[in-house]
Every structure is written in structure tokens, then in C-alpha cells.
Length: 124
Image (tube, rainbow, N blue to C red):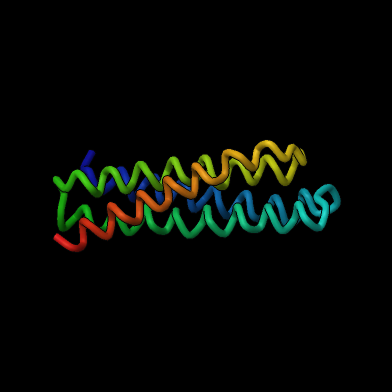
């Protein structure tokens, strides 16, 4: 499989999951989540979808720079960021376990690393 297709497929899958989780939160969890939980869940969905779009951008850039190592690093950093940042917020919103919030900044750091790698790729 071509390098760019990995990121386009991952980005598409993450978009699918983001939309599905957003709909689930809006409809399936409407009666379960507190007002604070709804806000946390919406933040998780927003960051999930924005960074899934980033994966699609990486896939398109990989058409131009297929052997660029920084693109791969950017992609994996965004995937890790979605899992840690959004994943911890989804769980925090549903369970109310505040300690899950300690994981969220690690996902935010992964997002920053991913966007930095993308910036450096574009700078070359």
C-alpha cells in the first residue's frame, strides 16, 4: 500500500469514528451526561475531528513528499493525540473519573508534536 493511502485511510476512519462518537454523545448519552460532561464530550469530538482532518492533509502531502520521515512522525503523533486527548476526555465525560484528566495533556503534547512535524515538513 502506498504511504499516502495509509494516512488517508486512517484519517477517514478517524473521521468516521469522530462523527459516530459525536452522534452517540448527542443522542445516546443525552440523558446520562451532566452539563459539564456534555461540554467535555463536545471538546473531545471537536479535537478528534480536527486532528482526523490533519491526517487527511498528511495523506495528501505524502503524495508530494512520499519519503518524508517528518510526515510519518506527524501522522503517528496525531493518532496518538486523538487516542490520548480525545479518548481520555470521552472516558472522563462518561465515567466522571477526574484522574483521567491527567492523560489529556499528553494527548495535547502529541498534537503539538504532530503539527510541529507538519510545519517542518512544509518548511523544507
